[in-house]
Image (tube, helix red, strand yellow):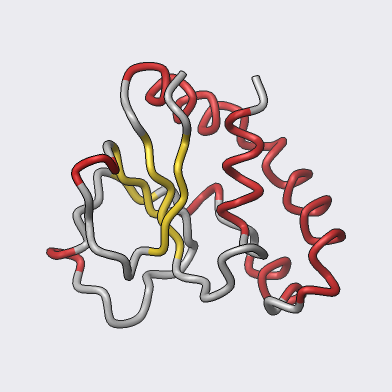
Length: 116
């Protein structure tokens, strides 16, 4: 399986990105859909609105956020398996808009996808 990468959607598209999937529930501010270079928008596997609002990118809540988000992801096994199947054939990049590079849902999703 190719490694699943994560990247802010505001970073320039790169040849090595492969299949680009936006994994945010909301469309990122300031990004034109025509210039995003997406292959897919998987908003259904983004954290629920309630969880996202509770977390509010507060790093002290990171550990609990990870647990709660993993529980939500457990109900989306088909979508996750679909991304795994893609990653078996080509590079995949999960795109997100959060400013925090360490404490964001794409990192959790990456771990779940790569845990085979």
